[in-house]
Length: 346
Ligand code: AMP
Ligand code: ZN
Ligand code: ZN
Image (cartoon, rainbow, N blue to C red; front, side, top):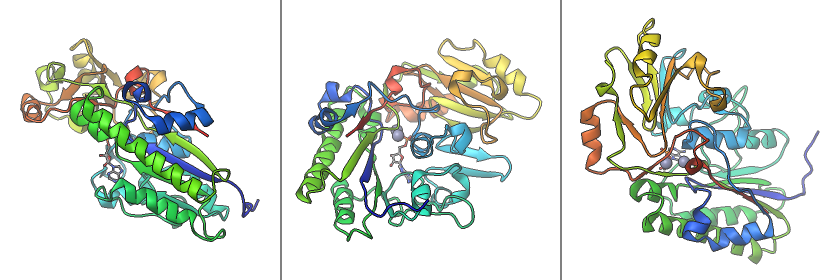
């Protein structure tokens, strides 16, 4: 069916790493005002792993990572023998990695204009054939000030009705950065929360100035929360098992391990019970609740730590990290309350 040309404008905003309890912990007046005018979920339960790319793609496709294929920020495709990482521009902008159908692709195919300010995946043409991007999009540039991102969105709202986007997705990298560097309870995380809350206030003021309050549907989400981490809670894999012949596709607070074919069960057995805060499973035996089995990019052995714990491959890697130890992290199982994000709509 053709999409109607007039109708509401959906503005979907993500604050990376905005934990469910930050409004009460740090204060977020603009966010609470929006919740007051609409609805606020107690928390948003992320998908496993509670990382940025997997969860942003889940939010716009309705699929868990095991079905949309962005199974981590860093992953290996055994069929293509190719690596994906968030820092690899070519991979990030290659639509073949991104399975499922982002809602902007559905909307564009129905004839709606959509726009994205840096939502993960919006830089790639996704879908069958040549794939589809939002009508308005940009190459990710973390140096673009957040004020400019807001003003770009307001500029889209100033376009004549037939060119004005009906769906806008907007991404902010904070308060994830402040939470990693100083921990979720730190004044710095609080400042990052205040900063993004100010961006929401700026957007709402801009929408009001254009008399568009009644035309805009607001959805504010985050991709995951944040746990406090410290150098005393670390796990060094090489102290527990022999890692020779084990390819490590990703490792932080969870790990994607590819042992030599035939040695998978031995690795799982060696890691089972090896550390009280470390969990391990063969791909085929992953706990149902993690929904992390189906995709070929999930390797044969998956490990994950309890909230607050950080995993390193070697003592040297741990020593390297100590100089500038991240005081907050995420990626843990969705059942960990610290991993919950926000969902507010009005
Ligand atoms: P994480 O490692 O899960 O905490 O990822 C958060 C980081 O992802 C932030 O520091 C962002 O700068 C980065 N990021 C977000 N979107 C993109 C993108 N499109 N391309 C590259 N990096 C991104
Ligand atoms: Zn994130
Ligand atoms: Zn992060």
